[in-house]
Every structure is written in C-alpha cells, then in structure tokens.
Amino acid sequence: MKRNLWATFVIGIVAFVLMLPLFGAIYTSLRTDNAIASGPFVWEFDHGFTHYKNAMGAAGYDFASFFRNSILISSGTLILTTLISLPAAYSIVRLGFGGAWLLRIALALRILPAVFFIIPFYKLFTNLGMVDSIRGLVLANTFVNVTLALLIFSSSIKELPYEIEEAALVDGASVFRILRSIIFPLMGPGVAAVGVLTFIFSWSDYLFAVVLSSSEATPVTVGAANFVTSYGVRWGDISAAVTLSILPPLIFATLAQKYLVKGLSSGAIKG
Amino acid sequence: MTRQGKDKASAFVLAAPLLILLCVLVIWPIYLGIRTSLSNDLLSEFEITPAGISNYRAVISEPNFWNALRFTIIFAIVVTIFEGVLGFLLALAFDRKFPGKRTLFSMVLVPIMIAPSLMAVMYRLILNENIGIIPGFLQNFGWDISIYDQKYIFYTLVILDAIQYTSFAFLLIYAGLQNIPQEIYESAAIDGAKYHQVVLRITLPILKPALAIIAMLRLIDSFRTFDTIYILTGGGPGTTTQTIGIYIYKTAFITGDFGMASAASVILVILLAPFMPKIIKQFRLDVK
Image (tube, rainbow over the protein chains, first blue to last red):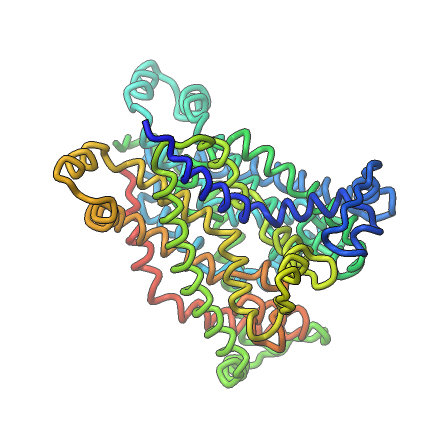
C-alpha cells in the first residue's frame, strides 16, 4: 500500500495554518509581559501561569463571571432548544402536524439575516424586563438554534423504524408515553448532535449578546472583545482569557466529534 | 405515516411550545420592526412619533447603506468561491488513507468550534504591528507591511474568513465524497482514467447538487458577517469594510436612530425575499 506521506505533509501545513490563531494565543499567554513587549520571538516563558491567574480574577477583571454566564447561557439554550424542537419534530414527522410548511418557515428564519431581529428583540426584551439577563439570552439563542434542531430531529425521527411505535400504540400507549419511553431513548445520536451544535453556536453568539447584555449577563465573546478595547496593551492576560474561553466548546465538540460531523452534514446548515 | 383522529390534539400539544416561540420571537418582532421603521425613534429622545416613510427615504438616499450592501455582496461571493475551492481540494486530499489522518481531521475541524468573535480577538493579537507573530515573521523577509492598510484590508479579511470557515465547506464536501460508491472509481481505474479526469468527469458531477447547497449556505452565512469584521476593523478604515450588519448595528446603537436602522433591515429583507423560495426549495424538505 502507498503510504501517501505527501497528504500528511500538505494537510499538516493546512491544519497548522487553521490553528495558527489559537497557537498564537496560547504562545502569548505563556510568555512574560516583558517578553511580549520586546517582540514576538523573544523566548521567555512565565512558569507561574500569571496571565491565567489574572484572567480568572487575580487582576480584578470580571472574566470569571463572563465565563459563568456563557456556561449558563449555552446549557440553558441546549436544554430549551431540545425541549421545544424534539416534540415539535415528532409532531411534524409522525403526526403530520403542519407538514412541510412548518419546516419551511423554520428554514426561512434561518435565511433571514439575524441583524433584522436585533432592534425588535431589544425593544421586546426591554418591555419584558429581560435585557441583560441570562433568561433573555437563552431565549434569543434558542430562536437562533431552533431551525437546525428541527431539521436534525426530523431527519433522525424519519430514520427510526415505525413498527416499534405501532406496537406500542396497539398496546395502548399514549403519544406522550411513546415519545418519552421509545423515541427519546432511540434519539441518542440526534440529541447529541443537536446538543453539541447548539452548545457551540450559543457559546459563539456575539450579535445578540452585544445588544441584549450590558454587564450582568455578558458572555465571554463580548467580554473578550471589550477586553481588547479597554485593556489593549495587556496582551498576556487577554490571550489567557481567550484561550480559556475557547476550551469548553473545544473539549465538548472534540469528545462529541462524531455527532458534530453527523449533525452538520445531516442538518447541512449552521446557526 | 400519519395517524388520524384523536392524535390531532396531542400533535398540537407537542408542537405548541414551538408555535409559542415562533409567535413571541418571530411574528411579534416582525411587527415591532416594521412599526419602528415607520416611526421617529431615537435613542436620545423619549417620545416616539409617527414618521410615515421618511426613514425609508433616508436609507435609500444614504450612500453608506448602498456601499455596505455592495461590500457585503462582493465579500460574500468572494469568500464563498475561495472557501469552496479550498474546501474541495482539502476534501480530495483527505479522501485516501494516510498516516495521521484521524488527528489531522480533528485539527482541521477546530475552527468550527471557535467563536468568530474570539477568533477575531486572536487575529488582532497575531496581526498586531508590535507584538504579532505574523508581522514579526514577515519582517524577517524585509516585508514591512501593515495588514490593516486600505490596500490589503479586503484580502486580509478574505483570508481570515477562510481560516474560520473553510472547515465547514470541507466537512460538508467530504461527507458528500464518502457517499460516492467505490466501484465507480474502480471501473474508471480499469478504463485507464487519469486522476484529474476522474475528479472532473466523475467526482464533480456527482457532487454538484451537494456543492450547490454548500455554496448557498456559505453565501447566506457570509452575508450575515458581523462579529469578525466589527471586532477587527469596526467597519473601517472609514466605512470601507462596513457590512450591512455593521451598518444596521451602528445606525441603531451608535448613532441611536432606531427608526432608520429598522427601515434598513426591512429594505434588506425585501431585497432578499425574491431569492428565498428558491433557496428553500433547494433543501428538498419533506416530511415523508
């Protein structure tokens, strides 16, 4: 068999370029302030992880609370999106509710520029008293992710054999019972795909966060971007904060890579 | 496979949360957006008064709106083609056995998992004129160029967009490649076809429908570009890299003119509307 080492080499270079920004951030976060200021290739590493300690609170930044907000927003969105989309997808696919037009409306939403919604959302959330709250950002991100979830769930429900449900129905099980005891356990891969994608996309949200949060509910994306403008010269601390912010979705998605790939190619769509 | 009769009620109950979400977060906001676009609604003034279509007139006669729209369209088309070609070549390179394939696959997917805004902060770090590794590296070759220079900024933004999004194009194209039966390649090999002939005459035609969907998705997404460019350039120098998203955001939250920003959003949707049915059809959604 040919070893195809050229492919390893060429793709290795591509992978290096794609990861260069992350390598750059990790590299800077581990160097001393003195080395950072003296030029990009001055090798002097900080063995006490000072920048990481600063980022997590030692220097008085709010970064730890941004981090907590991102975790709450992303997990809240993941749960709410699944709770709304899974029953709806079942209703559309198996019970014929609304049919394809409901999916089409959801897809139309996906095509509309999100920026259309920033002003109405700002007004609506101000009226509801949900500006700068975790609840508000969970709702906004659920709105963003619900299309993808509907498409993935309806395509995975279509793949399930109908016979099991039919047998349960004959035995007198209710629709809700079937959904809970048969569909949900069989939907593991679909739920994992929706979970990992929803987590990544809601962690990545910047537009709604910048409009709908001011301090209490600020997530890491907005926090890190503001960090650059307010503490522009503290590149070591900024790099450490960004590196930490990237880790949760990166670890989650790498562990669930199979589902990420499946979800993206079956939903063929991203939030 | 539709069950009739008494299941109607449960079907409605199961879909109810989705319907409520669509009403509260779609229909009501669309109404609010249109109403705002017809009002004098300034952040600086408490009172909101009817404005008729004056906001629409103002947007249409505003060169910045059209410049932003033009920049957005050109940027979307350029990055879609660039990332499509790169993603296709990368998928072809991956479509064989080679050492380190699994590790490299995971590495190539990493940009998908990174928030565009955090990517933008890292770009600012590695491109910084004083401390960035890219300018530092280029200086070794005597290239003392500013990457934010107006002459290069468009290309810089295209390359940075490609670093973030080529992985998406790659992943979807690669998934398509896996669906092509191996026998087709084997019979082509028996007939003595060269590799480039196989790619051009077999792989590309089979992938064509998938490539169309991927191109459309990238086009839609790059049309929404906001985070990266906003954090990197703020739409500058001047307004040269202002996307339509940045224009609307700035009009609303920096200038403080909600009425005009809403009118711009409505005009944008009206301009996109003719393309929507065609795009939706491409996805071949069905419930069977």
